Image 1 (tube, rainbow, N blue to C red):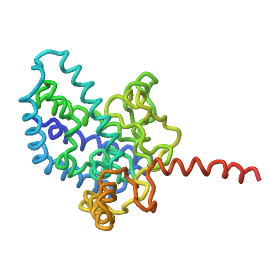
Image 2 (image 1 turned 135 degrees about the vertical axis):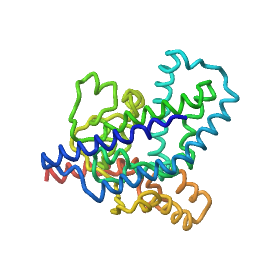
Image 3 (image 1 turned 45 degrees about the vertical axis):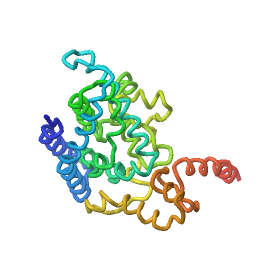
Image 4 (image 1 turned 120 degrees about the vertical axis):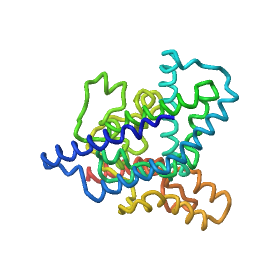
Length: 299
């Protein structure tokens, strides 16, 4: 099975180097040597571990495909068009839930751990995603009747598209493009740790899903990139596993099965004793304090 991502690696490197040279000439602080090295290490690890991960995914899709509801002829154009929208819809929900369930966040957090936003950040990919079941969000596609090879090919196409939107070099594109497609502006918001930007713009290729399901927000100011609590490390092993280790620590002192399940599957930031806050709780606290802030400003 052809892996489009591996074929694209030389292009990734060429574009990354080009962005480094252009932004350095403009004296922009878009890149940091240690941060970029960490991102590249995660990308290399993702490719290597992905060899096993793709076997697992292909095996799961193939198994489900044996029980398909329809036999779809992928030699025609229309199935590929439908598959494009179906894949992008699946990606949106995978991405959204990866911000709502700590189990999936533990893998996805890797991609958000850089405090820079550049083409190098696009390569900062998880080592554990496919191994821990991220592919379940696409399992319905082979069940409907799309071949496993076609599904995995479309997933690769989506990832290829998402590479170029990891840049601050491009500001905003023409309005029709910004309205329909995921763009650098929309995705910068997604990587922001600012409270108003948290858990927004989960799009893959099409931003229409965020507009439809209420998770869209326009870029209003330059985001503060990274996590609400940054790991402050460029060690690839720590980048890859720090959240899994944190889950283990929380579960070990959870005190009950219910609390343990909350720490594993609840939203990031959930705690049984209120010592930490989820995004929703942070927003509720901010809203509750807003009138007080206005009153203080008036005094």
